[in-house]
Image 1 (cartoon, rainbow, N blue to C red):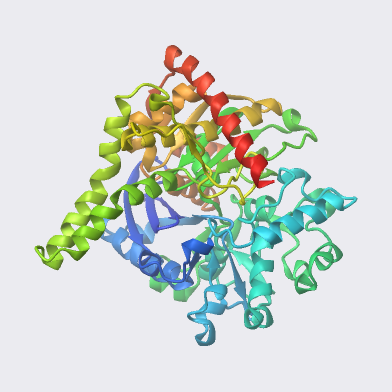
Image 2 (image 1 turned 45 degrees about the horizontal axis):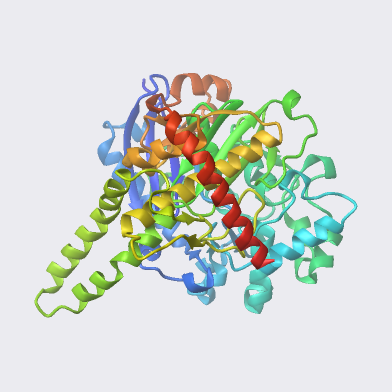
Amino acid sequence: MTSYALGLDYGSDSVRALLVDAHAGTEVASHVIEFPRWKQGLYCHPASNRFRQHPLDYLESLEQVLAGLWQRAPAGAASEVIGVSFDTTGSTPIALDADGVALSLKSEFADNPNAMFVLWKDHTAIVEAEQITAAASASYTPYLRYMGGIYSSEWYWAKVLHVLREDAAVAAAAHTWVEHCDWISAVITGTTHPSRLRMGRCATGHKLMWHESWGGYPPNEFFTAIDPLLDGLRDRLPAQTFSADQLCGRITREWAERLGLPEGTPVGFGAFDCHMGAVAANVKPGVLTKIMGTSTCDITVASYSDINDKAIRGICGQVDGSVVPGMVGLEAGQSAFGDLYAWFKSLVNWPLANLIASSALLDEASKAALQAEIEERTLAALGEAASKLAPGAGGITALDWVNGRRTPDADQRLSMAISGLTMGSGAPEVFRALVEATAFGARAIIERFRAEGVAVDSVVVIGGISKKSDFIVQLCADVWNCQVDVLESEQSCALGAAIFAATVGGVYADVASAQQALASPVCKTYRPDPAAAARYDALYRQYLALGAYVEGGVR
């Protein structure tokens, strides 16, 4: 009998389901469902950096994506699933009441953005993050020592505190807060009640300040000194944390029927998408895995002997077992990558989009079709034109901080800048400068790792951009001056989740064994052009100089 591992990957826009033959290692079937409320822009306000998602998007889409998957999978495949694991974006927390119900699933909070998931890209909690950083810096115990030294507005405690301050009704009803990757596993195993809730090592270590050396989370007094609204929350969180290769629970009868899976199917602890994507990429010391999407997340690992008690400055944390058990997981990333390109696309398309929308010569169907074609073709056309230009063409230098800076040294108050524009600057020249900016931002992360003694000898890239644009990936190889490999799998994060599912389901004794059988091969390798790499060394110094100027002005 064939055994299947099921990996489910929750991104910003959609959920992806991937069914993998747990012995042969073949990807048998996949399906994707977009989140309907998110697609409509509901509950978000980009101008104020508020990005929220309704839990019904996650629950309804879970049922839909699996219903679609079973139509594509071999007959009877659902009954042969031996394990399920989830990855999600993060930090993406939500408030639960004393019974473990997400507040926005209750009628009185159904349309309240503060009762919904606070998405990873929500930056409304800048002030709170700065206060947490200040408190940790003044503390005798260095609670941010293993989180890069700076707490981010993208992370759990800052987001929770911001919502508690902003919304008294939510503050009164919220008993605890949980990350999406822990919540979704708890939902289908019936363990959302605070007395039964358990949480994974990935989210708690990288975003919740959990560390064994100080007994878990910082003490309650640390949080109440920042704001009494946090009183007691720390003590309502599960004290023990678990790596993603361990059993979270088993699917309940209700969810087995809703998802078409056998009752009692093992479910692993959840983790963040980038961490599981790195597992699918066979992450190892010296290799940085970069997930290229709307933002980026950069993951590598280090052995205990290599890392010792070293604390890497300015990254998103180092956590024992957050990526693979038995190694220290290291996370960094950029707040905008594809988002920067999408911003420029919207900017250059605005006049034409508005002309089309107001045209009396076209019917609504024709307008929609034309708009869709323009949206589809804009970035490809810009990339093709930009690829024909030389490095630094037009003398333009840009920063990639359109959504603040995640690493190195988190600062969400920063904004992007473009210098060197002239009357001769066209859209392709500007677009190339933006691509160079994202590559420079990634190089800053690589150089920080190296400066801190963490080897980065090559890079493996995952995500849609890595498959869609030879121009962007080759430019990155030139800027980083190292080999860049692209994974074959189209669903690398979901594949990583399936690797954990196969481990939790008992097909493999450990993650390393599952990786040998199931991890994705490389489909293409990019190597730096020496002449371009030398030119980019000089252009990178201009990027750093512009960044220092802008950052100095902010401070």
